[in-house]
Amino acid sequence: MSKEDTSLTAEEVAKILKISKYTVYEMVKRGDLPAYRVGKKIRIDINDLEGYIRQGKAREQTSPGQSYSPFAPPAFTAETPLLTGEPGVKVPGLVICGQDICLDILGRRLEYQPFGIRAYRQYVGSFAGLLAMYQDRADITAVHLWDGDSDTYNIPFVRRLLPGIPAVIVHLACRMAGFYVARGNPHQIKQWEDLAKPEIRFVNREAGAGTRVLVDEHLRLLGMERRLIQGYENLEFSHLAVASTVSRGIADVGVGNKKASLQVPDIEFVPLHKERYELVIKKEDFELPPFQAVLTTLNSEAFKTELMGLGDYDLTETGKIVAEL
Image 1: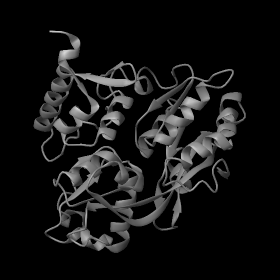
Image 2 (image 1 turned 180 degrees about the vertical axis):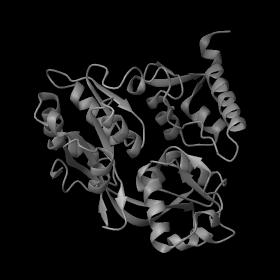
Image 3 (image 1 turned 180 degrees about the horizontal axis):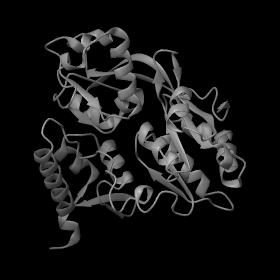
């Protein structure tokens, strides 16, 4: 049997997993699902897909109470450069933490410069990225951490999670966060209090993700008990995974950014909160050429134009230094 006979297109994989083909592309891009190209098309070997499904089932069996997404970002493993070796040992180039596609675009543009800067991407949440910086295992991390007491983004958390390390926060974009619900919003889920209704099934993000912090802060301020929310302990590890869980009817509502809702079929988005998505750089690194190249790229019209084409980004302050801590 030839390799072509055992391979699948992105559309075929999407039908098998009951997700959109764009989610399949995201899985391949992150390295979660092995693939190869035939001309301009990607192909996935059926054995690789079956192995991935088996891996998902095994993980589901060993993690009671947690849902498993076949396209969750890979956990830190021995093969992950970010968290291997001793603290302070980093791979050559810039290690950039965060999950938004705009960081992939930033990394690609850095590599395409005349004296290209190699960008290594790590798809982790805001807390994990800051921890990696604190341990000197990452150079830049994206954060969107809302502090409910001060109604501000990122600054309070950077101060707490990078103790004793002067840092610069550079604005990347504003995004809209909100509820993912089924088309037509059959349960009329419109505000945070609706999550506690006994008939509503929620799907959450992992601890340390910016979206999880947003949820927890609103629950705290409203005096809502997390244990009363059905599905609070059911976790997914990306906006797309949360939206897909709602789309497939496994949950009634989840929280994420608007962009993911546009990529998953039968999802409606209920806007709730405008969030600030920003980059953190150590002050001792900021004037070095690679980091100045990052700042130049952020302020370039070409970068902003590419992001504008993707939608759901407010780029009014992109490239602006918002704080030096």
